[in-house]
Length: 277
Image (cartoon, rainbow, N blue to C red; front, side, top):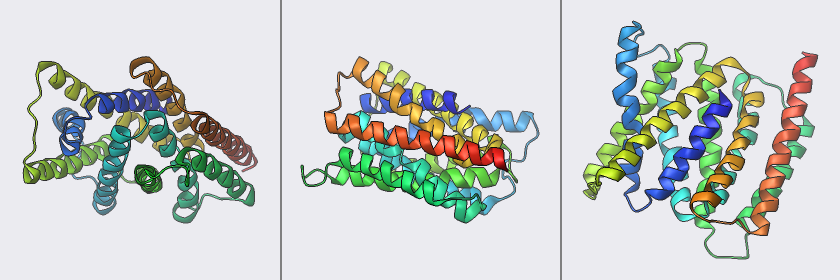
């Protein structure tokens, strides 16, 4: 499920990069539109309650996810795409910390050391002191921190709600919020036929990513599942080079390698500890 999710996420950010001349709220709205159109009939057919059980957590999770999406899509449109994707992958380390606090999943000193390695990788990507445009990178870090909260919430919601209910909340709350912002701003750009296709494709890919991600967190502990998010760096970098000819600099390459390596070490450690239990 996580491999499917990371492939979908990689394609999604590629489409967002292509659509960067559209207002951010418009991109987010179309990202949610497929969920709003497709999921409700499925819920009705399967007689699954629309409103779910843990409504408070469902709503809070979606509000956080809306901020995350705005942060991530913003960094995707203004930064080197590989850098934006890599910074997002700091989220598993924040997930580990939150999973320890919220879900009671154990965390050790070794994992904190691994987190420091990942942070060093992030510094190589942000390059503080080497440039003035650090603001987008900081927005990316904030998005990664909030992503941890969203993913741990999904893991917690597995006990109370169906995956399709979680996805449906995600689509409607974020979709209606973005539509409201778009109407207030009054800067809607009517797309041509090809871009309408791209916008709807964005929504379909996003739906696939959201469902696969939700299902994965219902099937396995957050600290194990989150490792597979690093595949997005590999898939995303390949697509970026192929379609946009964006080559990451040497600092970004080493930073990404440190983050991937730390993620792998944490995964192996978590898996080893899981076997002991």
